Length: 595
Image 1: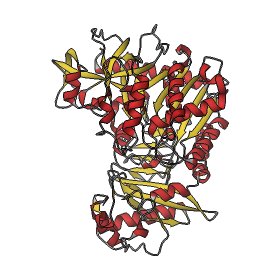
Image 2: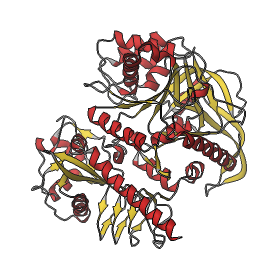
Image 3: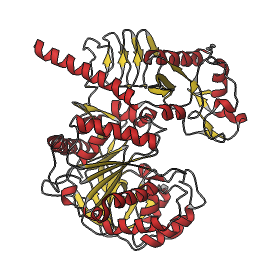
């Protein structure tokens, strides 16, 4: 394997080539076999489906995507959550209904983007697959990056379905004469070398026993698949590989001359199924009366594969977020259906896998991670107006499609996206500002998360800004009102915050399911008539908590984040982004003509 610095350069070159190839296809009608026949994005509900469709049609209108391709958004059926595995089964049914027998002769990419993104809430309203990235002109979003990174796949693929998620990035380099082929029956998955701690939060492949040659690209078979195993399990199962004489980082993080043996495992990312498997899964889905539990496309499909697979996992629920009574039964049936199906592995020894699904990952990868910056060409200032005289702002901050006054101060490790910041606005370190208009003289404290949404109530457009700590846990909830004190807002007990805001704990304080009480459902965010007013109000809430001073909210109409998403006005949010886009474009034309 190449040294770290050499790998970074290889990945940078390979990535540039793929981006250039994708750029040549944008806005052009693709030829048969040149690109995907069908691109599918999943949505959790009708509101999300509509938001995705609006953004897709905008992209197609602006010629930011290849044309002549069938783009679809398929929404999960109403009722209980069905997970990305259930969503995959539902998509197969939608494809058959839409294309009849033809669906078995096309190349399809399926991108799972149906979650509410509670761990990265600036993407909750418009979707993880539309996460803005700090490069490109106009800027890339995750959708374009996914399509660009997989640009070579359709040409070397038998008709089938490639299944991937919306919040990860795979960068890889293979030899100039090599190609990645998805042409074997059954399942085929990409595998990336990772350290053992990464393996504990991913799927890990136990490869067949023949020795790895550590070529850039290898085709292997998998003995069995481990889902989020502990380190002991990786060793016991024979998943751990040894790399001889690899350089070790010294205390400053740089690689020294000290050579040692390194342990690593091969972890998962995306996988492909051929149409025979797809038809088997569809038949299985049709035989179910209804699906009432969450199925994981990785854990519940892949663990059934390979000669070493056993049905033990069907009863283990350690990694299951919400166990349905139907889950063990469904797993057993899936195991019986898929047992004996091959799991082919494409080992990419020169590759890296990045996950951008949490506020901490988002901040790190966009501001501090020099590897990803180099490999993907990420910028500190992407398609934005922020005059160079604002030198007092740190280079490790990241500004994406935003307009900032020259007197703004942006501290390190902060991301500003789709926002307008006026004179004398300062943003503290480790903060995220998304979709905001902050007019003047505002201090956003460190570790803040501020994201504004347009909402439509009784036919009228209004605005509400969620303000949180970047480490606040929106997934945490309690069952009883008496336990609300254990919830935290900006590191402080929510009960204390409610007292400062003059709000009482009652059933009315929370929206939705009254046995699931948390920051996601707490009605604490005031509805305002202007975008800048909504940010001002939210920052006052935050200041009250930080300074332990009273700020009354009890006279305001208050919404929870859950309700904001229900009332969201996608059109108005996209209009705000478009205004910023047009202003930046105009300013650039002026600058060019002045030269």
